[in-house]
Image 1 (spheres, rainbow, N blue to C red):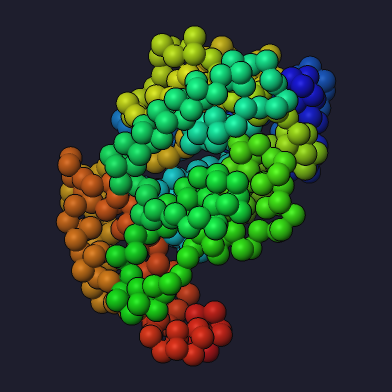
Image 2 (cartoon, one colour):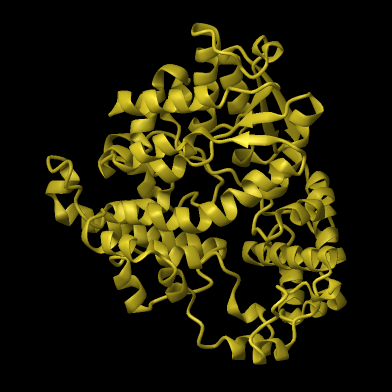
Length: 468
């Protein structure tokens, strides 16, 4: 299986080197993009593969984001060590607060939807860098976490049932151990949610919906990324009081898939499916992918989403994606990210175990041993700084009330607590969403939402009546 993953990924990368323009690589401090860079270097130097056009073959070039002075949010030092180990060029884009503020509105306009983190703005700005240096194609690492179980919130679903493909493992034999670990993970995750106020805006408990997906709780997590109901205007809350987003999500799934969730798939694979059909498709591949890149005419190619590799990964047992490795619990890990001092259950597991083994010849020992760090931008910024001023500039009473569906008083309260040393992170994320809606409304000429829209079944022109 390890060799199979290595062969499939290598071929997926080889295919994506074909181009008549220079091809670069987006490199972070994680294993996914580093593995892509390592395999590209191997193919070019050891097998004579061409990296795009002939001129580009002589210089393998990586592009990375730098968040100066932001602790573990800044992985540029890890990326630089990887580039030095590979002997390739690395170019960094400095991402300070002023840069994020200056590019917020343009990023939203190109993405066409909100995002509750500034990582999308960072990706938007990063994509100016290859453009400036004559590159039109880049390889990226998106899709790896989805296929190889890289997210810490997947561990609870992994523990829900034994892995029938590997009955000899400790977790498969010991149901009590699985249950105790899953309960520990639940407590730690809820503590993180409470601390961050970034998730949990809804607490879906619809039993019918959860039965449809074999009680997998990932269904509720995908809903937790929605803004809190209190943000909406009173008429919106009244009109949609009976709406059930969880049922809506399950209703649009193919019946064949839901039957497999209940009868065939391991809960880990069900959770991966739910995440891929929601957050991957609607957020990661849009505001963290194609739209931020194409805004600068950059074509991004994600080898981990190669259909042959995807099909191969889908057939792998859960236990080779998430390996129970309690002997590694005391190894050092970086802090500062959402589950700092919280989601320590992840320290008992090695996420993407089979990918690490498959990629070991192409990455540093540091990356082979490193725990996952998500690409997120810092979410705590000073009062009266560039971002505070930008949010106040966009989210005026007049602009917010012009939307028609948002309660300005809720936004005003968030404005007072979103910045400073004691900032409420949930308030900051809420402001990012509202500021995005205001920007989209103004730039696309979207008319104000009115209660009468609901009475007549909605706006049939998709909300662009301002231009009609």
